[in-house]
Length: 169
Image (cartoon, rainbow, N blue to C red; front, top):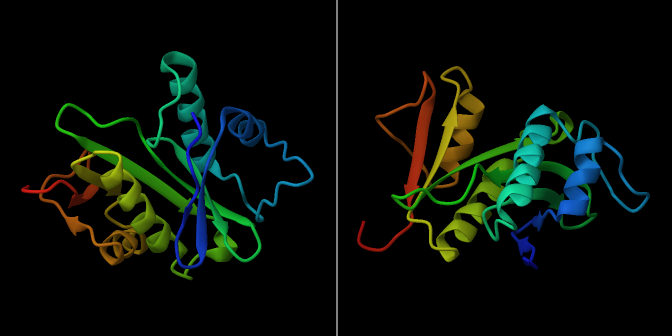
């Protein structure tokens, strides 16, 4: 399935294909791949591995996949963002993200997260969730800047943030 890239102000959220995911998982970029220093990180490898397993087990996940976060001006990959899977029975999806160390603090994660919120809404999810370690104040700020609010129920000691996407909720 061909999924279009999503442009934000400074970024392009590039939907990974299986072939690209396999290169990321193997840490073997092609000469034309522009990976920032530190990409892929541990979180990227976990996300891409889960994406590849979902594709192998159930086919293409459509919009609910893993995306590279690329700088629009240069195409440099500065991180990744993706869904942990398709919407659950309640219509909710969970997202995870990461930015390479040298590009943190520039607002890219919040900008990418806002773009993914739009993807989830357009694809029919009703709620988008994100979890962070209680001590990870930077991730809390990322989610708040993207329009998410802290939820009362964390998961496994994590702090949960969410944004309602559906109408009438």
